[in-house]
Image (cartoon, rainbow, N blue to C red; front, side):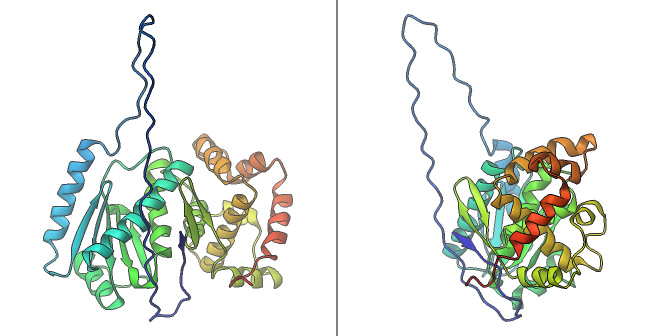
Amino acid sequence: MRFSEPTRTPNTRALVVLVALDVLVVSALCAAPATRPTTTPATRPVYPPPELVRACAAAEAKATARIDDASFHSVLRPPFVVIGNLPPSSLARVADGSVVRPAEAMWRSYFTRRPTDPILVYLFRDEASYRPWAKKLFDDDDVPHFGYYRHADRTMVMNIATGTGTLVHELTHALIAYDFPNVPTWFNEGLGSLHEQCTVQPDVIVGLANWRLPALQKALADGECGPLEELVSRGDFYGPRRGLNYAQARYFVMYMQQQGVLKKFYHHYRARHPKGDTAVQAIEAVFGKPLKTVEAECTKWVKTLSFPPR
């Protein structure tokens, strides 16, 4: 399954990818011999727990009560409550294929702690409904063209006509908040951006080259790309260099994926960051090389990429 972020044209409309849910097969346990004492095998806690299911149902009822429009429908997929003005079958398919399935892949690949609260996902079929409803429901005026995540109330607000790339990007933010609450911005946005254009496999999401690449390659060629150490250490990710910061973070995270160390880095960084380890220390520990060497090899690799693919 591939999620792709479209080129930034205001009237772009993308097809919603319809994906079926994976079927989980559970093997039966063999009974112990009668002559030996039997033991109860350890079992995973049920997820979602009943209290979360009830909380999601309550959140669904409260949210839908605020919408006086018969074109809206809702789908309950705890911990997600998906609401939108798509046809019911389309809404369910997007919920299953573009929310639940990527979430399952992220939980299996990176995140060990799952949400304990409902996460609301609003999917608006076009620009004409997206902006007015963002204003009516949340009093949000200056909203991004593609969509956004409201961290304070765990709500994703999406213009789904632009495709599902931003949906999976924002989903990443919603999920990582539970697993790595104090995740530094550069990695939070780097991982989220990696998922803007990707393939979803049962146990992993694989990021692909996307529209952020040409700007990064030009900055590298012109000597305008700041050092990697600066990107992962400074606190002004959303400052004047915001666009380039997104691109640099995305492709460094993608380089870790290409080198097969992204999962290892995430777990190491999550464990060591609260103890005071810096991003530079985490990178050097996982790669086993000085940061300057890692950066040089990453830059060389980025220059070999192309978008659109040749």
